[in-house]
Amino acid sequence: MLCRICKSKGERKKAVIFIRHHRLALCKEHFVEWFERQTEKTIKKFKMFSKREKVLVAVSGGKDSLSLWFALHRLGYETYGFHVSLGIKGWDYSERSLEMCRKLSERIGRPLIVFDLKEEFGYTIEEIAKGTGRRDVCSVCGTFKRYLMNKVAREHGFKVVATGHNLDDESALLLSNTIRWEIGYLGRQAPVLPEEGGFARKVKPFCFLTEKETVSYAIVNNIEFLKSGCPNAKEATSATFKRALALIEHEMPGTKLRFYKEFLKKARPLFEREVKRELQLNECQVCGMPTTAPVCAVCKALERLRERC
Ligand code: SF4
Ligand code: ZN
Ligand code: ZN
Image (cartoon, rainbow, N blue to C red; front, side, top):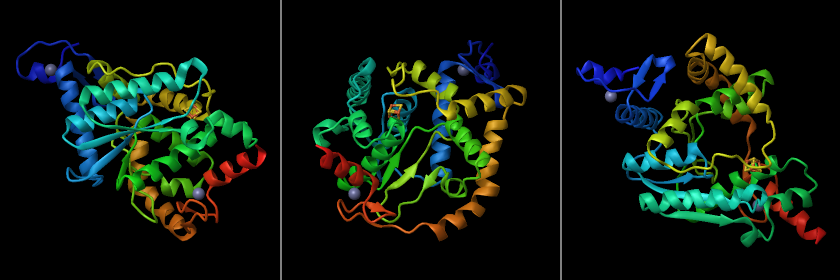
């Protein structure tokens, strides 16, 4: 297959990717150009951030977050990486993910802020989950990562935090929330969550780009990323929703993108009204971070752990 853009200029260059829902075959150079243009378009459309703001990019060591850091840097934004070292020993997961983040940080010459759970709190994420009697490490991990993102953003003066969620993640989450009619979650699912009540603005500049596109972007730019996931990642329900959507997408290309875009345009504003009525934030009595309870979930978990020791 030949690159469509090169072809229109009378050149013959082999395509490295075929973007099915846009019926677009592109060579390496034009794919990178297209990908970064799409990212920039999303940032501008949703007024995510400007070139005058410093952006904290949450990086895990995987393809999406590292591609995001690389793309934002190439687009000229002032980026800082942020990584939570969870202390997961299995498959050398934490060690290798930190190494991937460090490599990119050195390559693009941008600082990486690392929060080491064991050093700072005295426990790894698995010890925290076990000590608090939670069998599902991932839900504890999600709570801690979200909390730390806000805490670090606040302490380092960042008003905006960017994450690498892609269209596959967002459409699977939307399907899952819709099937369960999770009104609160539906109202909060958006490319931008504004800065409010002590929380930094959360943005997802890759929300209209597929996983195939983000992984291709990482590969053509020689970004080293962790290919094997975390040993705690079991067959999550999100994978089932992703498979279901992939099946529909195969039969009807463009469904995922339409599903998500139409939700943002037509349905989300209705759910958002409900959320605004429902959410009441106060400061955590222990750490001062915003929470809906008197003491936030992280402080509660750490308190429980200390009581046991
Ligand atoms: Fe954390 Fe679970 Fe992801 Fe591992 S798979 S990094 S434990 S959320
Ligand atoms: Zn081309
Ligand atoms: Zn707290």
